[in-house]
Image (cartoon, rainbow, N blue to C red):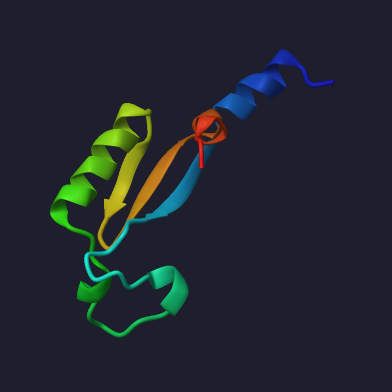
Length: 84
């Protein structure tokens, strides 16, 4: 049985994840794997990217980096609450 200190440490654990956004071309980094030096075919629209950022921040996540993907972080509880 965990102590209250164990629970406190668990709730403070920072988890990081990569978010793959739908590209405007329909191509997928997840399906194609490593790509050449041009990320353009895998880029989402600015509107899609901004909506994703706003929604993730609204849910309490921190945006760590933005590019073809988003790197996000937050306490483990945020990830446990997400619906997939």
